[in-house]
Image (cartoon, rainbow, N blue to C red; front, top):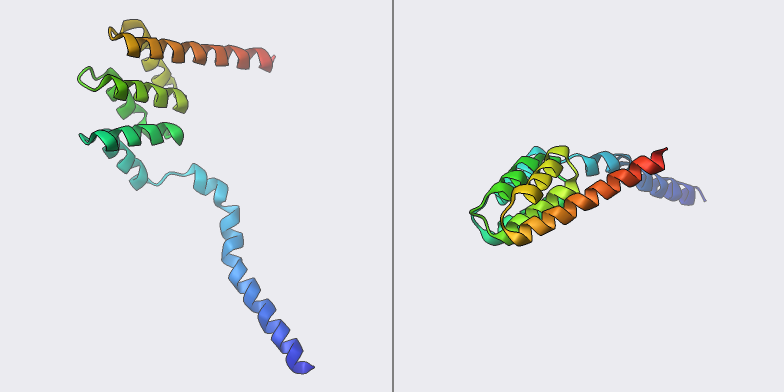
Amino acid sequence: MKKMKNYKAVIFLAVVLMAAPFASAAGDSDSAKNKIDANVLSNFINGINSENFGLCKCSIYLAGRYSLEGTVEPLINILNNNSKDCHTRVLAACALYKIGNTNGINAIRDAAQFECKGDLKEVCSLLYDEYLKTEMYAMISAK
């Protein structure tokens, strides 16, 4: 009987010790999701500025998907770069819209007003209109 109690105590202690790291990690999950390592951000920026077409487009997409604020300036540079492919510039505009940074939204607005390429101008115009609708709805619902 005594061996059984010792066995249960050892099992219980082993389970508690094994679960302790997971319990502390579970409390940090929100902060871990919101924190982006400087190396990760640097890699995204390098990917956005890359000459590799696929890497550039994937980095732009993921920067918007994960709303990486640190990538706003490189994305604005892509949007304003006339030598870049039009589809890449449209993707940069979509990523900037998804991030929602004021500088990025202003760059979309400027592209909608002053861009001469039809597809990019149309997409930027639609994105900026959607942003304005969202802002107006938020202001109305806040009252």
